[in-house]
Length: 289
Image 1 (spheres, rainbow, N blue to C red):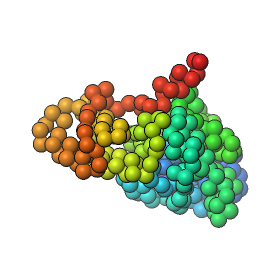
Image 2 (image 1 turned 135 degrees about the vertical axis):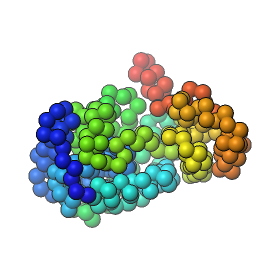
Image 3 (image 1 turned 90 degrees about the horizontal axis):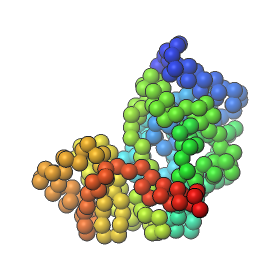
Image 4 (image 1 turned 135 degrees about the horizontal axis):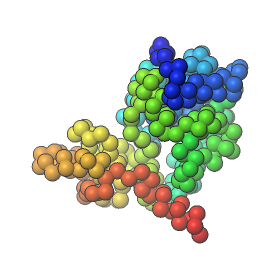
């Protein structure tokens, strides 16, 4: 992809230039591996690295397991192609780690630790990586429900977006200026985030969630979470789209499709989409104990 010119003045242009210069300074030689999901943070980081280092010195590393939705995998490939960054899929096995499958509030630590361990032990040598980075932004640093950050610290993973002080809004603004296709893409946490903490993460549950969310999105909803409560699927869609489910035909298709994914009961959460719905209450309590 040819680089989209960044404005020479204004906040967005200055922040974009700062990010590119930061990457050049952080890695004067060698190749950078980027833990890549296809979301706006990691996509922008890839786009900035391509501008700073050149496409031959950047590899986007996409972790593939049952926790990655099929639609997210497709989008990640399409976005990488649009950015002009080489993408390498790597298989992770967090489902074999008891700390992950037990699904405590620190589940993300075990997932990210598995990813960075596989990169260090299997991928870094193959791709001659001098460093690895991931898409933590400045807003993420303020949230208590990010145990994966501890894994990044343990593996000396770089955080260029956060180090440049880029908020989520600024990340999206730069992505729009550069024409990154997912600039306005809603956040898409892994499928395991739909399972209440303390209830085991299994491949079967993840596949049920994946299939059920595809059913809802096929009806034109802009975002969805299907929370897994055993036989019950609790659907979250954006609050301003709740009214669409009053349509009898649409509602019937959703119910039939979600049941076909393996659920017996289908419910709608009137609170709408809730980021960190399972984790935030737990970590907030722990911080005040």
